Length: 177
Image (cartoon, rainbow, N blue to C red; front, top):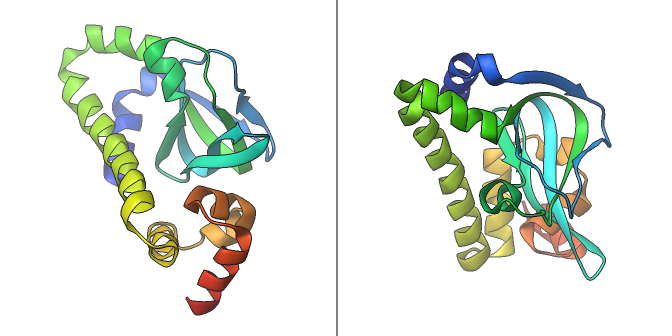
């Protein structure tokens, strides 16, 4: 993914806006429109929503990752998601509408955009399959394999929420790991 991410940064540089965000900053709040994608060069972002007042983590974007309010971008409707900075982060902002215009002017980059979109899609498929078919222990091990230092960078509450388990279950799984 790192090579693909760097290729995207290089080829889409004219429309990428570099930003630095402090921990705790909300980049997007629910019930608003957003056409922004956030490409993380350094740091951690998370996407989350609320169910019955409870915060549910949907996605983490660490180095070479991307996050956005896909429901808003694709449907052009207010999003249910929030996007939060979990540690000081260097992020490239990409406006989806600007991306569409840029690709119209640079059709040779369509394949790269498609490859990047496919990677994002497969990340989502893995998450859905993991939640459907894997045990809590296996979901945790997959997360740690993918992001070895995530437990030092992200709260255990956010990790438990992302894995769809309680913090108590996460503690038991971590104890056996």
